Amino acid sequence: MTEFDKLLIKAAEEDRRNGFLMPVYDQIAMACDIIKNDPMLKDGYHGLGFSQGSQFLRGVAQTCPGMVNLVSIDGQHQGVFGFPGCNPDRFEFCETLRYDS
Image 1 (cartoon, rainbow, N blue to C red):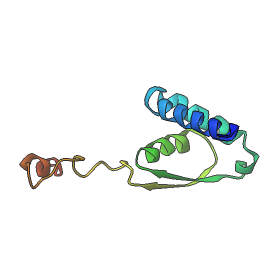
Image 2 (image 1 turned 90 degrees about the horizontal axis):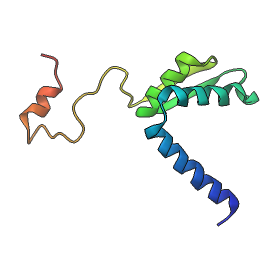
Image 3 (image 1 turned 60 degrees about the vertical axis):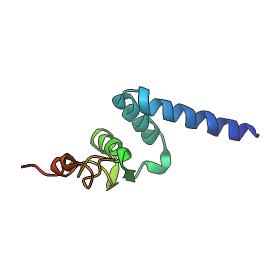
């Protein structure tokens, strides 16, 4: 295993741990610092978020200057339709959770 491989594994482990334990405002501040100090992003950048990453990037967009477009895929910006893993064919309340009435 090369030193680069070891660094990638360590970074992935830290990223996963930070996703659970680091306050999101600290994560956004960290992302803002990286964006601010990257000369390739000085003229703006596009954000592409999937699921929870959509929420994170929305926080980045609202906190850090420079995001030109935010593309949110499967994010929860307008709520969630249903409850994950709740089968409405087996449990009536799963279907009830989907509707506001």
